[in-house]
Length: 394
Ligand code: V47
Ligand code: SF4
Image (cartoon, rainbow, N blue to C red; front, side, top):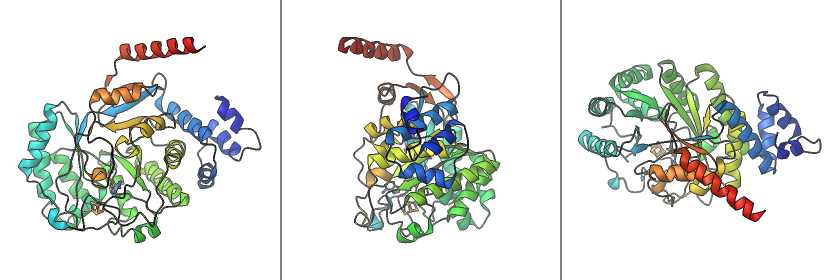
């Protein structure tokens, strides 16, 4: 056990009891999670997150950190909703919203394929022309023309909207899309499940129970998915813990979530900055570490480098995250709201970020099957150079 955790076990430490529970492999309660959030012992929280990550990884994979060679496709920026934190859908000037034809989506997909991507992550706003027929055509064309690419597409909110537009059940929509080539669902649209925050942020779309129900339905059809939590929109630590507990409960029932992704709001183009508190690096690392221990039935926690920034995402890898997401291609949602992260990263860059944080880069596919373990020679060279520097300093 790490010295940090031994110290945290000493009785005056307010988190000693929770630390012991985690070491013993017991499930944490709401109060336990709140105790961790109230602690200022960030390093101990990180050690706990890291311990959870290593346990979940299994023997021989403790140092693996995953990334995927993927691209984001956003067929439309028009959205009938007006969530106050969203700059992407541009509610101020709807005339600037775009909608891509099926041909345009295919052209973009082919561009990505020529670079060797293994996944298309496709999400967009809610536009009445982007109905189930539109997405079915896109999925069928991609599946026929680019059969080796996994299509992770349409958040639970979009699935809900497609069901509303066509008047058929969510299950029928999911089945049609699955038959057309849908491979899994992304985790967007969850925001924060608390009703008060949602009311203040004018989140009128798919309510929490329905978001969870749609993921449950997808899981039962054999479609895996992910789950997000958006912070920096006026939430409390209680709201965050309750959000994660709802996800944990759903996972107990349907077992299809592959990973949890804490997101951080950017405010450019919104009018909410004065009403909310921007999460600090400290807050985000706590979210990552607490998610890793509280969500004991989620195999992975993702440090989404686009939103965390490369540097904080690297640190998050020592706090319980084991995935950096992907190369992306061209990210639009967070860039519309002002992130300064690059629009995309090359595979080399992803591997460099992982390796230089002390981990072994592993390229994965959407379902976390290993595509390639990063260059071990490069790993050894970096470790040797590090050891040499240590010797020089000693
Ligand atoms: O659902 C909206 C959020 C999400 C802003 O499934 C904002 O693997 C920051 O869900 N600032 C979309 N965030 C992104 C997303 C995602 C990303 C990476 C991987 C996966 C996955 C999912 O972005 C939205 C919303 O929660 N968002 N506005 C904003 N201003
Ligand atoms: Fe629409 Fe999603 Fe933006 Fe809300 S967050 S306005 S549902 S695109």
